[in-house]
Length: 103
Image (cartoon, rainbow, N blue to C red; front, side):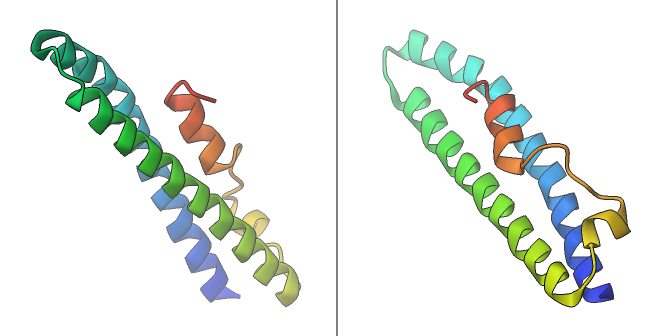
């Protein structure tokens, strides 16, 4: 049971980092557009889109990890999320999409 709690807490910390990256990336979108406007090229916008897609994928994988941990907890007869007080308000993928303004 303590191993599941440790995994859950580590996952929650990681989600906070993902949300921070999403916020930084969202702010970087303005810079990418500005660079493209000055250079008349689309490399900045394409790079932003690639990073954005990778971050959304990472958030989806993290959401899936929550589902796996919850299934393990149910099998063990415990509710890890409630036991640790770390119940996410949204799935990580939903939060990242919202922060990036695409969901």
